[in-house]
Image (cartoon, rainbow, N blue to C red):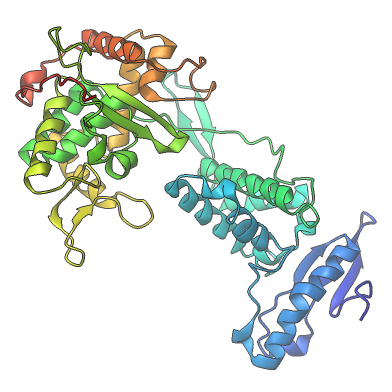
Length: 443
């Protein structure tokens, strides 16, 4: 049959504003028999609507009619649907595969949520043709997602002013951003199918980020002391890593490896990675790189604890894998178990952190991420330059730090020494300082 002919079970209706809307409407006898193909909005583009019915909906209808309701066609591989755009074109693109694993998982959760969303007409959004995604449809989608989180709430700030915040606004905005990215990538790879006009652009999204709790150095000390008392000294050391090196908790447990700690060619440094923005830095441990000079630890609390953990790893025959592992072997593989579980989560660590937080008498809900933010805040309080702060945190965006200067060992040493001067506390409270020698690099 000619593809330009009107497709089966397709209704054409003229709306009040004079425009034409098309719908796929299975017959009543099929609905009575339990047909799973819903009444579907096809947009106003007549030929695109006909193509979508011929390519997707009508084959599904025939599949159900001939083989039963459990034999429906999978939509992810059918060109022209929103599900195909998100879960095939975008997820299969190199731009997606280059993202960190936890970012990929977050994007997939958001895209699947949108694709599985049941619309007012009973259809699933993932089945809609891309031609149906006009700006007003996306705006309506935004309203539906926001409504899931309840009505706006009024909050009083420190000056007594009332501020109205919409629950779920940040999560919904992230969904819109991912959809915008998926549409753009889909158009770049399949411009013959994906319309160039991105309906998720120029939405005027507003962001009401709640302020991140920034732990203090004294709170960090209480946490580490409590961790040592409970027998979780490795978790206390991880908290120090988050503070001193501004590393994200997941990266500490997943990406900080034994080989990163004082390797043979650079025995006085530690390799610190920030996978989220693909940044890395060799962090010096001493105030000088010259063995003939009197060295001084510039991380006087963290370095001895790391050295003790490294020596313990050597005793039990661990020379590869994550620096931080659980204290027991995996029952199946007989290897040291990682703290990172499926989905790139560190839930087991968080359960322990709750116990330590309670023992330390810290505010409920404090996490290692709060210590990272506290460490970054300490850098700012120490009156460091932007280049020194950026050398430590490895931020790259000018929206976060305004300068782009490559980090040097001098910047890192000066930044940490200035930070120590500004830090007023008794570091001997928690750990004795082990003798860590400054080792001449191997040629």
